[in-house]
Length: 123
Image 1 (tube, helix red, strand yellow):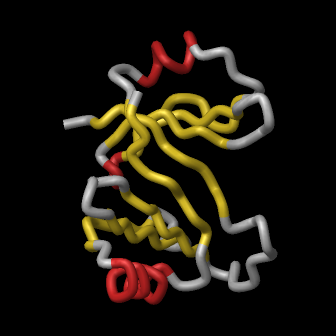
Image 2 (cartoon, helix red, strand yellow):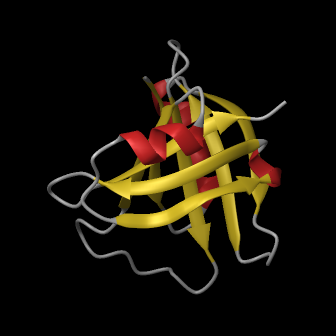
């Protein structure tokens, strides 16, 4: 399994993406807004292809130190099989299709409670 992105909660996805582009040389790769229109996601990638998902949600402007980290994502061949096979320490989200992201995903917790997203790209 390869780490494909890390998600950070941010106050303004476009502004923070521009900082990563200008200051660290990242490139914007893609983005989407959730179906309810409340969360904007902008992805920027380093030269090796590892992406940061910068996620801003309407009404969440004040981020306390330590709350900006959201999750990291790993690519799997089959989300449903991985979800069943991996010993988890809490289910955050059962497997489901994410059409805006072109993927099927699930979210689990590691032994210390960090959220891990399992991502199966869907063509």
